[in-house]
Length: 223
Length: 208
Image 1 (tube, rainbow over the protein chains, first blue to last red):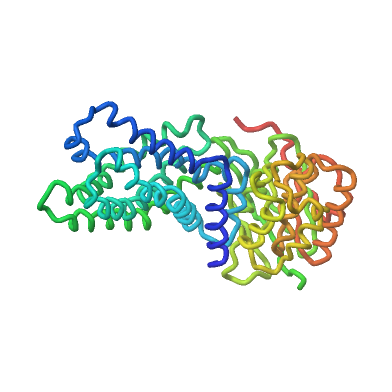
Image 2: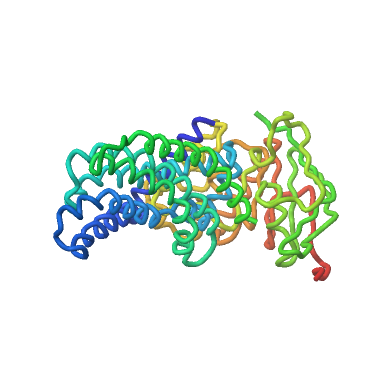
């Protein structure tokens, strides 16, 4: 069973890098959204550094959603999902592994380039460690919850837009605690750790619960 | 090692979208036997295979395994080759099969044997996206050899195969049955395989 789980994880990571720029699109979108923000807001450096963590987090959520329908869509289209179900892994575990692969190829990469994009928003240097930490801790929740949306919208046309509508409201807690953690170093005396702990709790809860919901939706989609 | 599993169905029924596709369906297939499913389009051939593979719920009735260990799950004993080929176009032929061999397990199938079964060894390093429809079908059928499972569920396996490949398919089925495996094949066109059982689905007007 471990062997099957590892094989599935490696395959999904490999496919993400091979299959036509899903990762490139997410990273590019992230870059563009962050890059046009200062053009819209004007060159007020204080304002920019105050809103930098929030902007980076919002752009990250949008960029991650852009590739979220990839989690199940291709396997559904080409019939691989049918065969995955006859494998040795229970369906919730299949959903969890595919969400994990999405996190590794999207969430982690977006979190790691965030400091670079922070330069465009005059993000203070001392805020960088907490920003990256908050993103690494919060993006598992982003990928695992996105998997619920991806499985619910399987087989629909233009499913990406519906997926965003379904899932973005669920990201509100992640966004609030993520930004609270990251901006503690900028705005002030409040400690970053209480929101960080809540962020970790959100991710852990999504890792456990979201695959169950996604598996139920997948069963429904295959009928 | 020869298989020794039998499959029996009692009073199966299938519902799709509120419509009864079939009901009261019973059959038994012993080790080394094959069942040919026939019937007009929409008679429920694919639905029955998907029910056995665990992809569709049973509306009524039950499926039972003879000779399997009590904790065996039916879907894990089945190879399901449906209409869709489950081929990843950005992977090479070998990578496609290697993944299924690792994933489906138990890891006693041989990758070289799977590549050879339908004559894909020469194409092993080619990206699967470049394969023709018939070659993709052969790649899907080669999956049968990546892991040894007693029950083969084949839905129109001959689609887009040429005459030589049909012979390979017949040989694959014959070998599988000789190894005391079970095959359930839905098909319109005749195969040379000797089917111990035939099940004609449909024939009556669908119930509205």
